[in-house]
Length: 245
Image (cartoon, rainbow, N blue to C red; front, top):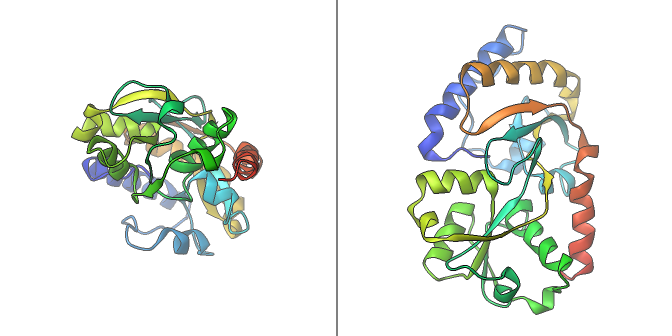
């Protein structure tokens, strides 16, 4: 999920190590990552060995198809052990509630970090959907950052790992400031097809080996997890629906 062009070489090196670790225990995988097949098709594939998804699609559309293999921990401000938050960003320092009535950039309606978490933060502060301004869908966190920097939106909610990558690689991010943080949520899960749920332990072991040999930017470790760990996302869904989002 954090496969920016600037870190693609590191991601590919990580995948190579992961493939070798899996091959050593008899699991064959493609030698190259699939970057072309639509996410929904990948997550519905009964032969899926390993992928990463957002907590919202996992709990609100793919819980019947996917099994959680591991929950990652990242080295970025806003992250905890197996958790993450979103940075609420704007061009100038302000109370996010003061900007709620203006245009808000989101990467997509199925995004936990870019839309639902911000809606939940608003709802937790008593702001109903009818009280906020227009939402513009940009298609990616990076494009949302650029939209705010260019003045096409006043505010955006950016996954904290993406925000760290943006500060390193996206000039527009340096024109913005963090004006708040959404509530903590479980980090983006590594998943496999339901039919491969029995492979969770060996997949985690392979992930540990790959992290040790070819660290992916900001990825520190993974821990065991299950769909039950994502109950906070389901609860957030109920909160935002109650507030009209």
